[in-house]
Amino acid sequence: MCLICDRIKMIREGRNPYFVKELETGYVVIGDHQHFRGYTLFLYKHHGDKTELFHLDKAEQVRFTGEMISVAEAVSRAFGAEKMNYELLGMGDAHLHWHLFPRAEGDIGDYGNKGKGPVWWYPMEKMYSDGNRPAPRELEDMKRRLLAELEAEGV
Ligand SMILES: [Zn+2]
Image (spheres, rainbow, N blue to C red):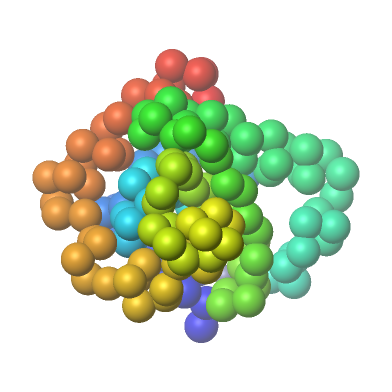
């Protein structure tokens, strides 16, 4: 079973606390762990055999990536990013999903190349520690801020 299909099923059943908004091609959700404050994912609606961007037809590529860019802009505004990082990896679950990380100077400490580099150079056990899970009120506040920015953009 695919973890992302599970999370989408929870959204459709109204029981995913991280869910922010449904767009045409995907779902916007706040990340489970918030070391990188504002970390958001954009989950493609369909799985099946479409596990690469080039598996989508051209029109769908444009819709999906266009919506991802709009989500990234809203994340950037909502959480005051100095720089956005965009990643589509699929090595854990092949289901198409974007990781959208707001980045700030010093956010990986001294890890990586003297504190510079991708989020994945920060130790996994720190990034995914329970201490980085947002408290319920904090999560509600993040969702409200992100939703307000998406709506301000008309997304
Ligand atoms: Zn899936």
